[in-house]
Length: 389
Image (cartoon, rainbow, N blue to C red; front, side, top):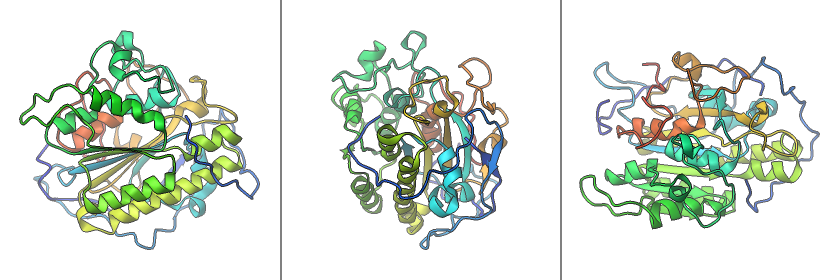
């Protein structure tokens, strides 16, 4: 692809199609005062249509709308904001609707999306799936995976879990002169600071930028506060690659039950925080024209848990993209015929693949015109297309 310093952009605002019907921070979600939303059966394979319009944020600014045939569609992108919403069952977005989740619906209306992506095949837990997002690897270390099967911070590193050094998207961006940041509302994400800062490998690519691969690490269990910190950082000095983790839905799910009224309220609260970030980006041309937002989840959940990786409501997650060049309202499987829409199934790692949360690592480096993450598997070769090119 062409250099990320070329400045051309593409986007359009259209209507949307139909979508599918269907771990721990001290932050306490506000309990819902309304009855639980109707439940879509776990085994349903039918799509539930979204409303035909969602109320845009009052400060929303249309994304750039022009490019030339000579440039690659991602030429305008020179920074990526990757967001993981812990415990986000996509059914919550459809059940709440545009009125209660205007930002999620804005991402659908203005971006490319699917509500039928997949987690790691082996586990539907927080640390295993976030490690997959950052490394582009499966879980099973014996077959090339990252080896993180645990879900608490034990003081170890990803490298020790795998038995060797495991590179991440932070390595690729940092070692080529880019800036990186990690914001998380769970303190157990200190695993990643320890792995790629305290135990990062030497930088042997061009200028030596040091062993610490993550320039800014912010761990704060207050989701509202950490979102405000990131919004201010985006305005002042945005990183080339930023990873944001918000745990509100997961916290509510464990406390009250996934897809119950309190969990749905937490999704509404999360939607408001996302709206703050999108307004920050869309309100500033320097951000709006050059920032790609990617959003996914580590797992879904239904009832008291998300632990069973063979349950549809646990392994089905969203994957969304919003930024310059992304065609408005397009479903990602329609844009990517080489990817296999899994329906309600749980495909393994052989054969045609569904879109997975683990695609995030190499999709991010691709958008930034950087090499693939060493040792990665997902989206390699990089075929996940956000632009319809």
